[in-house]
Length: 394
View (tube, one colour):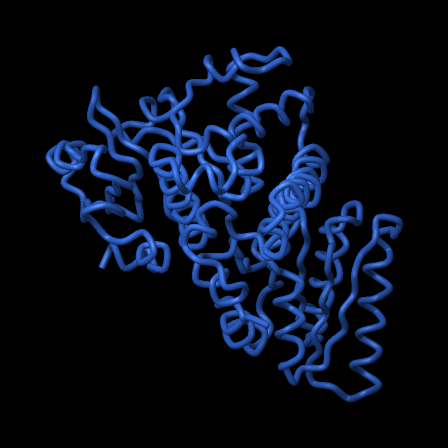
């Protein structure tokens, strides 16, 4: 079984150091959060207990298991102990109960370390920011990279670009209908239903689903909210659509990238460039098969650009970067990566037909740290998808 890079970080940097913060493993569905934690638990020497919360349990259940851990620690004469709670977001008002018990241990100097994880990013973040401010530290997990899918499942580059990075769906790619149903029913639908609709005030659930499905199918394209509104069956206004896009972004499903500009007003008013966080979502709602896509240069160009964008979003999530696009009249740069005060321009080119004059115009206008091509006449796509984006800013 593959060990994701978060393994060493979680094991060495967090759980083995002295008790300071509640550790929270955060990430999209189906990226292996629980598997990672179980791998770590197999190696740590700290006594631990692993609990899985259930929707039928009350918040007092947290009090009960916490007290059980204190007694176990006391009776066994342990100097430290680790409490792990999975799916913690299922318990109503969970963060208040965790806060009470954590603060009590801090006051009484009980050396119980705590690790929380859950499948709903939005519900976890809501609880953390509402009740546990200053008491937690995040371990962010992202979608599987090309290197990981290649190592674990033997994916080649074309397969990764089309089928994306969901490990649970990897064994189904030879049956595309079955693969699509799995991604749609086991990943996309629970993400919408449990991670978005149950955590936010969404007055038009059908509209949000339509925005998600249409948005996925337009990944790597610029699509104004007005034009998007014209394709929706349910009524909605531009403000509502923009708000729903933001919710989908917070759930690590679909982002609307804004145009890079010197002022915030121009950024907010720009036409969004739709971008999935995992190319599997792009092709789940696409009409084109794998065979059609890899043999059509135009379709393949969209696939490659979307895959690069998805990788950039994952890297940005890890390292607190911003991802934009840039366009000025007929000149365009596919992606602009902003980190601290520096920017990098990236143009994705899959064949000789696409021009890259936009990079020249972008360099002249903004003097980026770096501006380069990924693909034809530039850095190979396979190489780029295995690059630590932070190195671009060295």
